[in-house]
Amino acid sequence: MSSSLLCGRFELSLERPLIMGIVNVTPDSFSDGAAHFETAAAVAHAHALIDQGADMLDIGGESTRPGAEPVSIGDELARILPVIEALKGCGLPLSVDTFKPEVMRSALAVGADMINDIYGFRRPGALEAVAESNCGLCIMHMQGEPKTMQQAPRYGNILAEVERFLRERSAAALAAGVDRRRIVLDPGYGFGKTPAQNYQLLRELRNIDTDGYPWLIGLSRKSMIGHVIGREPAERVFGSVAAALAAVARGGHIVRVHDVAATVDAIKVWRAIELGDFL
Ligand code: 7PJ
Image (cartoon, rainbow, N blue to C red; front, side, top):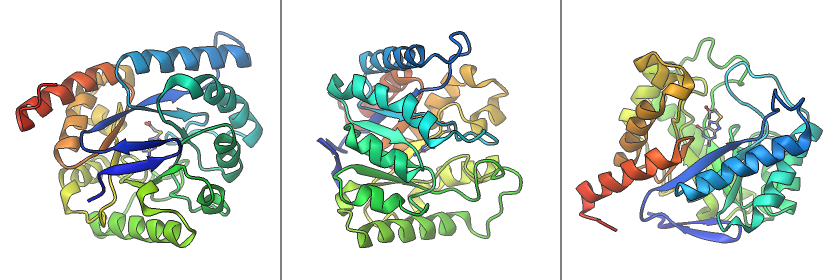
């Protein structure tokens, strides 16, 4: 079992669940997309998440939600680089959610600590972009491509297929020279999976053999939560907290969430119940 994750400037202990706060850097419809407004809004949001108890931040400049439109390399960099620069001194590891090797290289050059790639570093040049740094790598499973992945997700045995994919991609990372302590795996909830498949993948998380790699789990406000409670994303906080707790109870090490304050409290109470840990 790995008990820590090497992540750029940081070595993160995984003895207790960690909370990764989501920082989206997206055009602000009220500001004509003016770059400094986007940056300021994202940085302010990041500081709010830090105050709420986030352990790390995940900065994203391109939406990967089903059906989202692509963003150019230049636009993605213009969104995320100033935010990384502004948050570099915040004391928390900075992850960047991107699948573009050029963006990975530039983000690492300005001080990002982790690359979170929904393609699992499958795109040409992606592994090379991270191999020689000391960044953390989040290797996520996805069936298909964001634009079309929810049209007809199909699996024989979803647990076996996700496991096989993650094994193959982690082996490729090792072969590229990545230290195994830098790697975290993600089942990729909502990425080419029906609601039933997502819930099975969560229920049976323990039945996936990760070969000792830790889990990063992203369920926050996703449509699988909306599918059950019938609410819009902003109203999925309580459902998302339930899902995050279920994930940590099944061995999740890092939970990627929008609602940091709510998740921090829930995990504290869960730890008090499970472990008698009152600190
Ligand atoms: C995930 C992600 C996830 C990782 C997004 C959303 C869609 N990265 N990026 N895992 N989801 N590693 O937040 O709803 O589940 S974008």
